[in-house]
Image 1 (cartoon, rainbow, N blue to C red):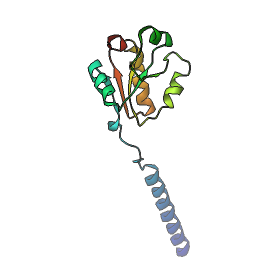
Image 2 (cartoon, rainbow, N blue to C red):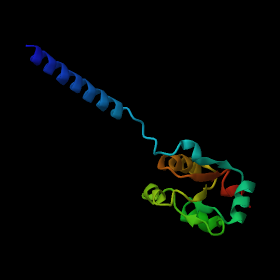
Image 3 (spheres, rainbow, N blue to C red):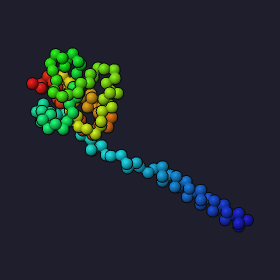
Image 4 (cartoon, helix red, strand yellow):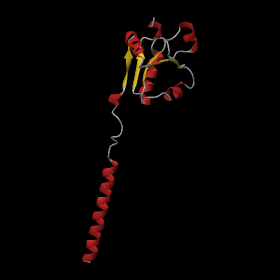
Length: 137
C-alpha cells in the first residue's frame, strides 16, 4: 500500500511539473520583433520634402491618377502608383519596407490613408508630403 501511495505521489509530482512547464513556455513573450518605436511615419512640409528630394536618399511615390500627373506634372523621379487602381494596396505592399519613402497626392487625403497603410504593413520610414502636390510649385 505504501509503495502504491509513493508511486502515485511521484506520478502526481511529475504531472504537476510537466503542466507547470507547459504553462511557463506558453506564456513566454516573443522578443524577436522590433519595437514599433523604430518606425518613422509622419506628415512633412513641402520644404522638408524638397530637402529629402535633394538628399537623394528618399524614394518619392506619386499616388495620383495618371490624368492628374499628366495635367500638372510630378516630382522628378517619383514612382507613379495610382491610389484608385484596384491593385494599389498589393502593389504598395511589394515595395521594400526598409527603404525611406515620401508619398504624396494632390492635397493630402489619399497620402494620409497610404501613410496609415504603410504603418500596418510594417514600413520603416514613410513621410506624407502635406498638403500635397498642389502646393509643390
